[in-house]
Image 1 (tube, rainbow, N blue to C red):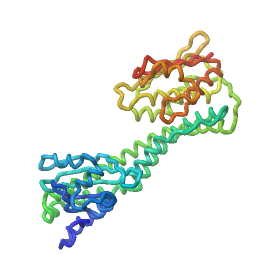
Image 2 (image 1 turned 90 degrees about the vertical axis):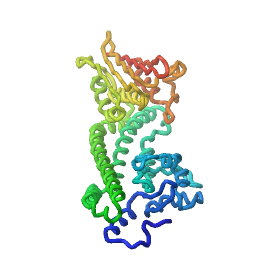
Image 3 (image 1 turned 120 degrees about the vertical axis):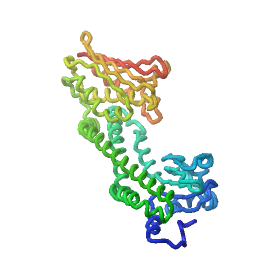
Image 4 (image 1 turned 180 degrees about the vertical axis):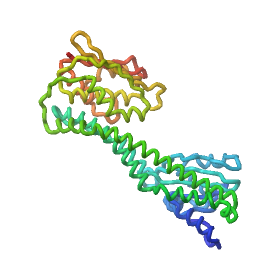
Amino acid sequence: MIKLLEDQQLSPNEHKLVAILMYAPIGIAEIDESGKITHLNLMGETLLQPLMTGYQLSNENIFPILEYMAPGLADKIKNFKEDAGTIIMNELYSFSLPGQDLEKYFNVFVNKIFPGCIFVNFADITESYLGEKAITQFEMERAIEQGKYEIASGVLHDIGNAVVGFGSYLTRIKRVFDQNNPGILQNLATFFSDQQKDFATVIGEAKAKAVVDMLNGIAQTQKSNREEISKSITEQLNIITHIQEILNIQRQYVSGEEAVELGSVNLRSIINDCMAMLFASFDKRGIAVSLNIPQDLPMLKGDRTKLMQVVLNLLKNSLEAIEVTAPEKRISIQVYSKAHLLVLQLQDSGSGFDQSVASQLFKRGFTTKNSGTGIGLYNCKAIIESHGGTIEITSEGPGKGAFTVISLPA
């Protein structure tokens, strides 16, 4: 491979610049408009070598490599007519190496410094990307059989959702802190900014400016990452405050305590606690939740943990039914007393369902989710009926949301 400024006589300042670029933790390639590689750092060689070896590609031109690594990127570079500017900024590309099933994921950004000088920067984020994806896609694969295990599996599913959120934020914190020292890169960017005139006399004004801009951009990205960590920590605290209660529910069923713990139950308190547990998920997805629950509701006689399981399951179903890109993201909850009953109504603006789905909602094993177990609503119906109540879920059709009504004796 082409070494960066190999075998050239360099001044001390040039040596500093070369060392920084050569040992940068991301791949950096300088090319011209034809794709010819003029300079390539060590990380760039490391990241591109498997592609070149596997597909028997030349190391002289980056365009054939990009056709495998980032389809369409070569055309973007060729079609960029400005004398200078950003061609792409932080785009994610995925590809597979020959003979390997595992996909690689690269973040790529490309800047044109001036005619004949284009920087292609790329970083391998496969490990962190797949780690987050595995955590967020974690679901219980199968239901535990019968009786207490059916109830326990529903509770474990709820705990899994909380742990997934916690684990995802924890993974992001660990990754960013492992890879970044907050002061070094910013100090380096400041140093280059202060010495830009000196570097310009050595390598030219355009390249010196490009280096400064690139370092400032990376420093800004690092700053954004740290801000993201701060937000993640805040969200973790919201989860942690409710972890103990979730674990208590888990211990009750896993230990085999099948007896129904009947007592005076405040439905308003149950809903508020469930909302607190799922607050981070609602906030992250931008879902507006409205509550209309009087403070002077009559009490219920029942098992608080089982009724909490029902409310958590229904709220999660509504949350998951609302697409991230949906124009309207809304969940409304209303509770009122009627005769000797307490009525809970939950309405969402989710995907809804047709009549064929409606007739099977409460059947054991039926699910519309790719990773669902088909016992969530089945258990909800069993719990509500064990409390002498009824549950009904209706929809006006696909795309028109769902409407749930639960009636319980007060």
